Length: 79
Picture 1 (cartoon, helix red, strand yellow):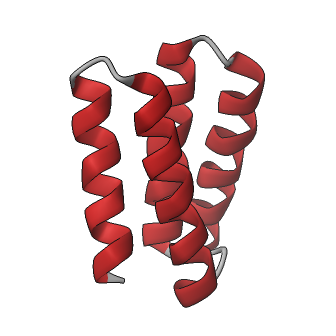
Picture 2 (cartoon, one colour; picture 1 turned 60 degrees about the vertical axis):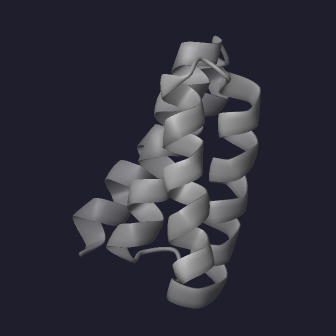
């Protein structure tokens, strides 16, 4: 979980710096770690999905963003 948190935070910092592709990469890795450790419906997994969706919107990948944002909402509704 600590590595996932660090990657999540790194992804958000890269997003803020406008480095969207690197931010997406860090957030995808954070999401993968959180899914494995916490499960799909955990709030932290949903948080990583939402963050990834935000960065994908900002990078112009609206289709992938919509998939992650919908999954984040579904995960949050389950909790």
